[in-house]
Length: 123
Ligand SMILES: [Zn+2]
Image 1 (cartoon, rainbow, N blue to C red):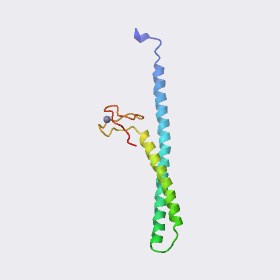
Image 2: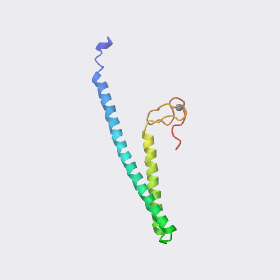
Image 3: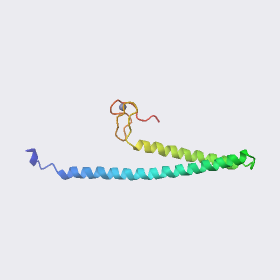
Image 4: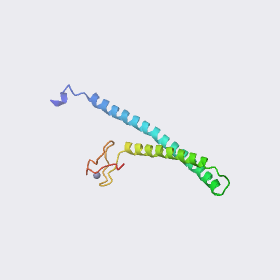
């Protein structure tokens, strides 16, 4: 009888469960680093925007004719913003995607909806 099938080892199932859990924990940990990084980038970005606002204001009211500071800030903001957008995209891809057409929650890594076949990402 199948009940006494010796080739079936219930520990194998258990091992699979633990492996999957360990993988998920690891992914969650990896993601949490990315979330911290994203928050850090957002803060830096806000700080640079504030500095740029001040520099632009001082230039506008004629307190300074220094445009080098403004140019440097714009360059820094451009870099920070690219990094921020990239990390946002990466994090979005690491989350289980929801289909925009039919609302089906798809599994992570799918590019197309398993229900209706629509593309899950537009970028
Ligand atoms: Zn769909």
